[in-house]
Length: 219
Image (tube, rainbow, N blue to C red):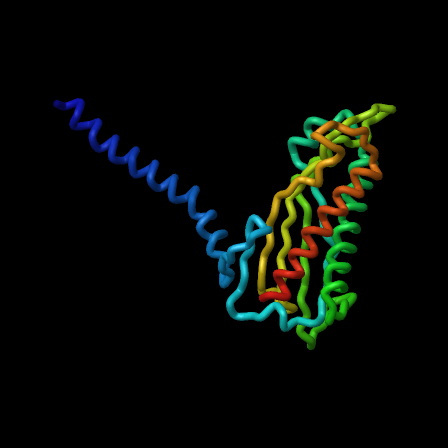
């Protein structure tokens, strides 16, 4: 009886600690999910599409595209840390960032009725596009030395885009993880090169950009 007398308060205290710890761990997720005034909208293409009800995206005619950032997947970096050079990683992140910006601008141009600005105006309304690629996984990178590599796909990556106004208010967010197109027939691996990898990722970026601009035009 005396042992139970001491264990009961201890058990209650332990349960209280577990409950408090669980709440503390979940709180950041709830904060992110609420995301101020953005609401989730169903999208047949993007994994996640958040939109503000207070602003009409299709009303913007001026666009400022920030230079996108690109990051390799952490698992990819660990796996290839001794197989690829630093210059290769640096060149890829810089080149793919430029490619993404080019594809986003091209998608707006094809949609029409958009003017591009080189800096954020202080007086006019402008749609600011902040895009980045993360978890970049190139299945057949350029190894140190001559190594022939065969792949079915160039790889996969995650796109994150935030659309905001000049005062920093978030208007919409897009997120999507997607693979590049399949190569060859019957899933047979084919010899790859840096140029082919870039081509396939450029096509993926074009698809992301086109669908994003279409979402903007419809909202």
